Image (cartoon, rainbow, N blue to C red; front, side):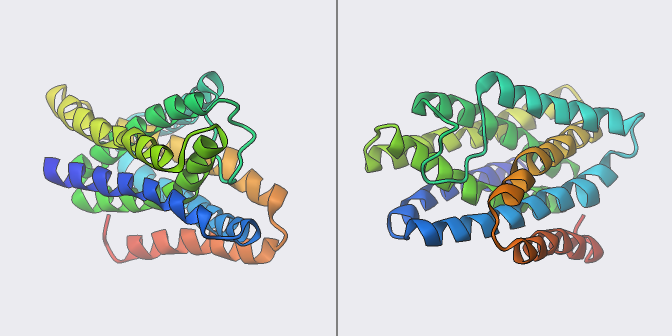
Length: 240
């Protein structure tokens, strides 16, 4: 199980190198691609939260209280660390590139914890959660790379530093594996908190961005629904 967690977190960390593609794509084309990815990401996160993580947490007392706790926790992380899921090449939210790195490291560490807890529930849930996080990572890492370059980093250095920061996912997975097993923490609490975090990301960041910037709302709505349907089909196929 530990190998699966480390492998999953490392593979997701490799997505950080996708930022280099921004140098080969016209800004207008990139923006269209990113908005579609944001729509897919929002649907996948919502679908994973409601169709996979929440059902796994219904065995505990007051599961929705922990969903709410997860929602609040991610809100606090965003507010106090100025952490935003940026999806633009030049993100105005991040004034300082180093603040972006700090926020990204903590965010990635939490992703690792979520992946670890999901794998400890079942391999299938771990894979589903990893896929949902990976889909969300694509627009986010493109944005992070843009922030670093915009903040003054050389391209090669920006790629290297961004990758090293995303490796905190592996650290989060490693810590999560030993902590959750050593202290026998009921994993249903963790999956409920993770569900709240996924709902927060989709509802407070991704969906508002689509509403504000999408010029083709119908197509992006369909892509959003496709993300949910894919998670539902995985559920029907018995992979959770």
